Amino acid sequence: MNHPAFAIFYLILFILILDFLLERVLEYLNTTRWSEILPDELRDIYDPVRYGKSQQYLKVKQRFSWITSAFSFLAMVALLCSGSFIWLDSLLRTCTGNPILLTLLFFGTIGGGSSLVMIPFEIYGTFVIEERFGFNKTTPKTFILDKLKEWLLGGLIGGGLLALVVWIYSGTGNAFWLLVWGVITFFMIFMAMFYSNLIVPLFNKQAPLESGELRDAIEAFAGKVGFRLRNIYVIDVSKRSTKANAYFTGLGIKKRIVLFDTLIRDHTTSELVAVLAHEIGHYKKKHTLQGILASILQTGLMLVILSIFIRKGSGSAADLCQALSGFSAGKAIPSFHLGILTFGLLYSPLSLVLGLVNNVISRRNEFAADRFAGEHQNPVALQEALKKLSVNQLSNLRPHPVYVFFHYSHPPLLSRLARLDLIKQQRSPGSQIFSVEDQKNKSDHYG
Image (cartoon, rainbow, N blue to C red; front, top):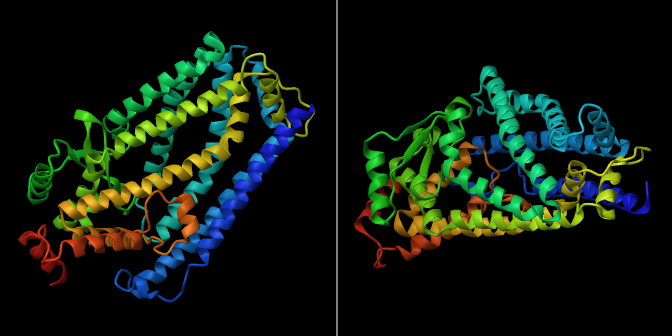
């Protein structure tokens, strides 16, 4: 291996090791916030028994996360150092010389092998850990069918996109990134609009929310804030888990709000409307559109950098591929798929930085959506809903601030409750925007 390739190889090792150690440090920082005694700030949220269970759940999940992360890290280092990726490439070249088929076989083998190896960990996480704490409702049959569907979708959608990218690269050369960016942008917008129509039904049943008190209340709120809402759906997540949530999806006439059936089961009408008000707030403040635009721009940035590194006939492209030979004596043949793999490993630090920026923006948007719901609906109802969601999921309500900075796309519960308290103060009986309906809702919660 030449010196530039060795330098890239050691840089990849350094990135892998640094990433692994960073995650372990972040997890350790979270443990410093754990307590066997119910903290004072959580006494109106958790009861002592439920809080003790949440601490056990956090500990069990962290130990399991450490094991799975260590396994993945050691496996990647072993594959990289042994030159296994170059060996696989050489083996597949005995089957075909077609660049598209070769790329599909290469990543299909890696992805399929990784998925198979991780299945025991997924089974343990679902049928042991989640089962132990009362969350799992997945049957072995559902688990197997889900896996088969995931593999099929990955092969059809992922494989189809990958084949198209390789075809574009082969035909256009160094300007390929612009066309690929256009293709991926179209795909992202298409999926944003039709994901719930095309993909979700393969795994879950969605049914329109039936007429009644809840639908009337949701439609009344939507009309009050000028939100055209035709599609309100309930999804049957209870066949897999007891955890609850709601989400907004789609664009334009395809937009819809989806409620987990577990959410409806555990919350009052007032709380559900408050949760939906939060989701509508995201749309009214154009957070959904901002997220799509940000993803498109970040994809373009990644493709521009990639096009520089894997420029045809360049020394950097050959060095990227050769770096995958590790400590072996394997000779890499410069190729698109090897270049993409190496680039993906090198790109992870920039991806981390972009992820941090996205998390900061996302947390800010969550506060904004909370404020929209609190100002236009009932802040007390939203607080109660957030408390129930967190307690029912045994969430960590005292995460370390550094861990939040790196990993949380949503603000911690206590921060959200504090912001909503400010809105409650603004909506005090002396405020002009406090209504008789708000007073009734408040008395319902505390009386």
